[in-house]
Length: 309
Image 1 (tube, one colour):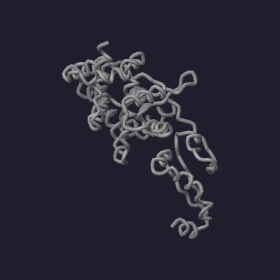
Image 2: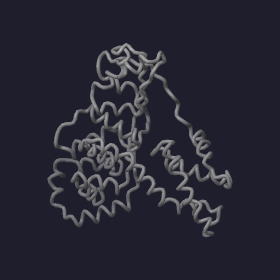
Image 3: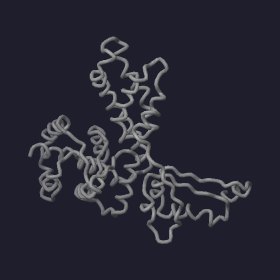
Image 4: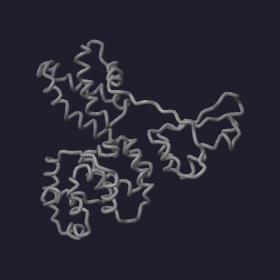
C-alpha cells in the first residue's frame, strides 16, 4: 500500500507519529521497522517521530537507524500568556483578563499542554466572572475571585487527568503500570523517612490486622492534612513499586518506558534539581482511590500509618 501511494507521485510522502514514545507499547521492533521503511520499500517516504522523550530512550538496539534530530524550544511563560490573551472576549478589559490568564497558567502549566489550556479557559473564565456579574464581588477583589474559582479548577484538573489516563487504560494498560502510578502518588505525599516502616516486610505482615474503620478515619485525616505533592527521585518510586507489587518481576526498562508515558500524559511532572531528575504525581487523592479500588489495592493501609506515627 505504501509503495502504491508513493509511486503515484514524485513528491515526498510523510508518515507522522505524535507521542512517538507510545509506539514501544505495541512492539519492540516497530520503531526500528518504521525508520527503515524508506530503505526497505525503496519509496520516496519520510518518517517523522514527534516526542518529548530524548532519542537516547529510543536507541535500544544496536544498528537502529539514526534519524535527523530537530529540537524545538519550549514556549516561555510570556509566550503562553500572550497566546492565551487572544481568547479574551471583545468586551473585556485586557488587563483584567491578563490577571486571570496568569493565574490559570500558574495552576495548570505543569499539568497540561497549551491545547488543554485553550479548552479549559473559556469555561473557567465564565466561573471567574460570575461573582462580578452577580454583583457579589468587586472586579478589584482578585483574591476573593480566585478563591471562588479554586473549587472549579480542582474539578477541571481531575477531568483533565481522567482524560489523559482513560485512553491509556482503554489501550490495555497493564495492571502493574497502575501500581507504578500509585507508587508515584505515595512517594509524592508520604515523607521519605517513613519508607522503611511503611514498605518493609515487617509492616506487610502487620497491615492485615488493621480495622477498616480506623483506616477510613485516617484516610480522611490524610485528605485534610496533606501538604504535597512533593517531588521524588524515580529510584524511590521504583522501590515503593517493588514493595507493593509482588505478582511478578517487571524489567527496569519497562518501568522507565511507562514513567515516560506518564510524563507525556501529564500524570507525572518531571523537574530537575542539582542535576537530579525528580517526579511528582499530579492525580488527586480521590482519583488514586478510584484506581486503587479498580485493581483491588488497599491504599488506606499505607496512609493509615503515615499519619499515626
